[in-house]
Image 1 (cartoon, rainbow, N blue to C red):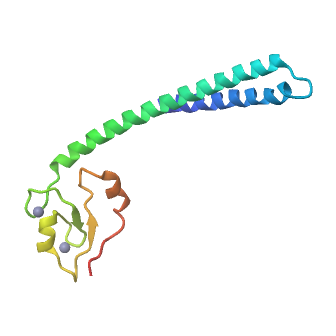
Image 2 (image 1 turned 90 degrees about the vertical axis):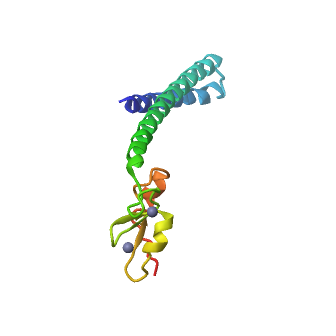
Image 3 (image 1 turned 135 degrees about the horizontal axis):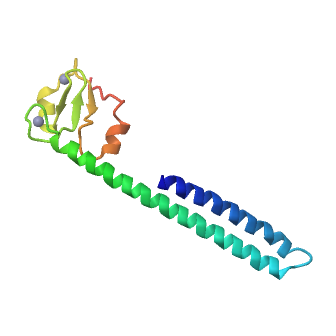
Amino acid sequence: MATKTGTWLIGIGVCFAFLGFCAFPAAFGPNPDKTLLSGGLTVLSTGMTLVAGGLYIKARTLRGAAVSGSASQTNRGRKASCEKCGKNEPVIQCRVHQVHLCGGCLGDHYDFRTCAYVPSTRRSTAKGAAYTHAGRSLTLS
Ligand SMILES: [Zn+2]
Ligand SMILES: [Zn+2]
């Protein structure tokens, strides 16, 4: 909702700024008109203020979304633990055996003939990296 308002403000502001720019050629033409120049500058600055306001609203909305998103991520991450020792945070998932493993247990589980590893999606930190690499399997063979 607020993002839409910000987009509209930016759009209207850009229109205002364009109108202000349109007054410049007339102001600096063969017959300079100082009234037109000041009028154009006023419209231009009004447009820029609107754009800045729209950007501010958008940035504030994005920050709020990021805060709520990371909060839910920590709640999910608290439950995550290695499925072999149950103590450490899982860093990798074996897609073949469907187990999440920490760094220590990865060495014990390692089987080069069958196992295919992907970074664990249950990791609470670096969630962006986990999402980007989720589809790519790290086959250790
Ligand atoms: Zn473990
Ligand atoms: Zn495995």
